[in-house]
Image: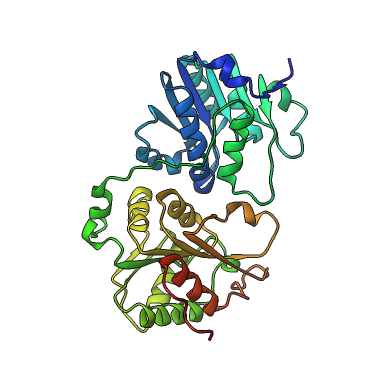
Length: 353
């Protein structure tokens, strides 16, 4: 039987659910942008046991959500789940006898897992293209909501709103214990005394040229001499090499440099307590969004990028020009970044350069 439009009635029909799973198998950004919708589900089923399934390499992030009863990891990186792992996942899910499974991702893999869960009520978000022919039979109810301008986390909340879930504003409700900050050699007393920079991404075309990083840090240090610098990178050989070269070319010694030593929750704690987080189009921007940290970011122009850019007074994004693979991002003026930092800090902007 094909899925029916939820039309506000899904929550009303399932209010008595005892066990609920929210399934989203995306990467770090997808999971962070899921959290406000996950909180809505928690509020809508206060008596239910709430489970969430995410990619296993970011499973540790779920420890920041004590209001989720159980988090499941699904193999996504560096390799996709094998057939055997998928069958094992299905068997485990079916043993739980979920009353409700909610999937706002819509991918083929997650849709099959939703269908095979055996849950009597399965809410899905129809893909923009309508999905493959089988898609409508994977769910009992569906919503359809897509926007080229609203952030992904708002879109997911709007999807639930279509299904009858009350929605006023997106709230992340992540809780990070101080021990995660202390493990990184930083204390609560250091909060707000440093800038945090994630200079690298998964591609050169999303990164500023090295000489521009050096200029940005130098001018900000002159403008805000009381602030220290914390730099971080992913635990890959590429980013470690880039970090070593960047630090060698700076005119100052950063207070802390983490080249892959931090786990995901420790990194989130470091970002949470920074005065401003600076980065390109990468996962740490989503951690700043989750923790409510002021951020300044830079993105290359292109279709679909707008939905991943945070909105609100605490965030600023400077758009550059699209460039070829292997080339650094161009068109992001250092002066614009300086003004953006001043704005999120609530101080007068520097003069034009």
